[in-house]
Image (tube, rainbow, N blue to C red; front, side):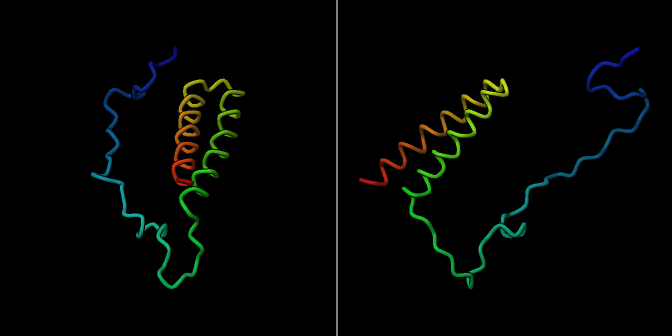
Length: 90
């Protein structure tokens, strides 16, 4: 006999505790670039063109896997990135 999805196997099983918040500042997770690191920061237009290219490829991948909603959202992100790239040129 199968059990309903999302239900505990035992009715009296203790519930798992969840932390109050799992969000951390990017700096504490190592995402921030240290001030002494010399990196070339791409311009907004270049970044937007790259994002448009990548989201275009991801859209095709999502569509080929039958992930319609994800493909749609990625396509919208591609359009937004293309608009941002065009605006950056002005």
